[in-house]
Length: 461
Image (cartoon, rainbow, N blue to C red):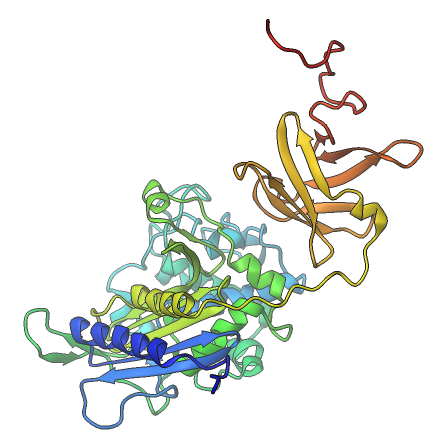
């Protein structure tokens, strides 16, 4: 008897249940709900609760805090993809009069706009949004703490500005735009700005005693686009699929890939910890995997969404306590458990249906000076350049359709690769952003910068 490939093995399911059970017990969470996605579908759901009887399922709402920022970033990138704005535009161009308009839209998305982390007192997460009716109330008298673009400094007011930008350019409230452009197309019917039954209540757990205190659930007003949303493990699992594969009804795969790329200069401590930030997404290197997603917290709630794109595995963890389980670590562990216990099975190798002989002749070994590289044709019609020593610059290249290729990553990202030919059509060398790659080290028949000594290679006697 075989197990369908989409189902998890019993041992994997037990390991997932054990991880969330330990998290709920040690974190003293009133309840914890979790889900795992693999290959574009939910393959596991689990929950633990302190209340006897029916526990939370995939339809129970929890507040997701700053995961809201990822939704807001999606709205902004839709505007960019439509040509309404450019990420390099200063905010002032589209939302004048804020006093911090020299920060670009990309800098606000990546938390490099130099803005303060929080709005002025009283603490916005635990007080009514009506106390801050205008953007000036959100920003306060000293909204900027750092030079624009110089460092990553997480800013909740920055995402309030992005929500206001969406409202200005769409001519409608942020939550209405979100419902129309993201939630409805993706089928996220249980994600909403205000709680809808069934939903969990938010609690504070006493640090020194096993007793509870109800937390208020405030409407955040102008700060809504930074942390207002309620959602479920079911909806966030579907959102994780979107962030992995894209959806042309909302954002294409290239744009969600752009969201997942680092966009902020890392602090020294961030480099050591292996963390960064993209365009509305947190990035971390953990357990040998590159993970993207976002965490969230508001009084009474913690949330974590973690994705390993390479493994096509994602996990969601939601709890209803102010402090408790380390949800980002737990969701990362759920991804690791599945990825290690049931490694992704690759698609069968298949030969290319056709190949251009003028491209095929470029495949093989090339030299940049004395550095040896291998150039390989890829299944998608591009090229891949890798150092033969295992160390050095490498990149994939996208075909441009005119006999040239553009680098996609690393040192060669955006750089042009082209084959330079002799008058008779034979290949002289490759030109990669002015680097000359030849079939032999310092090939005398190619225009090597600086020339080649006419006496050639020699020993020292």
